[in-house]
Length: 249
Picture 1 (tube, rainbow, N blue to C red):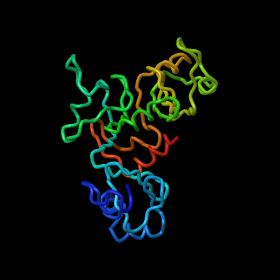
Picture 2: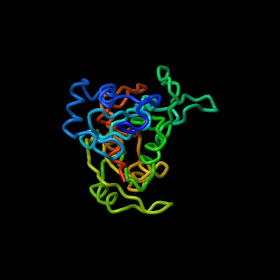
Picture 3: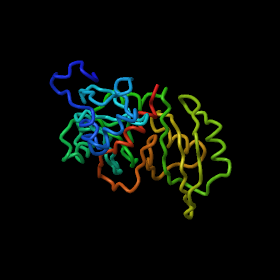
Picture 4: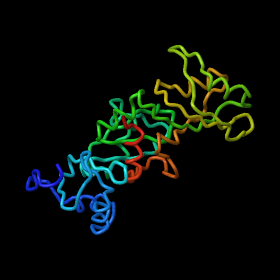
């Protein structure tokens, strides 16, 4: 709660201190943001002197959500090929937790990539955000770079955008482009918001171009970039805010 309510309760701190601790800027800079009415707490414009509980307050700066609960963790991982998308595997196969030695918090993967696929995975202990990112009603797009059997049929992209009949119904991509041609193979990039199992491989095989390599390069506003296989990084405040914006009601 902001202002004087519960101002002496455990965990309550001055708003500018909370903002500074979250990396917004110096305390003086944060005080200026509050003074200029650029900060809201729990739906109301903040004022100098407000106190908040960083574990529960919903804070926006310039309209972007700021996560101040230090217990919450948001990670990007480049899953290598051959790694199963589980935190631990009962069959003893290499799993995601094998790459999280320095992460003390218990996190969970958001969605999956099959063992033969690689690329971007998000991991977090924020269950609410994870649910929204996976729920089809929010339509979070995912982008994939695929190596497929070539040469690429000129009609492939058009068919994929129009919709392809699969065993469990019609599926379509939002965007499709040819990236490169490499002898008897082609590299293509496609974006879609479907989440059905093996959907990318099934779509491309249905139009005559089975996949030999699949890399997920983006989930919503988060991009894989130059993150090396098997490595993780913490998302920036701006990236976390962009994720919340992508799944806003």
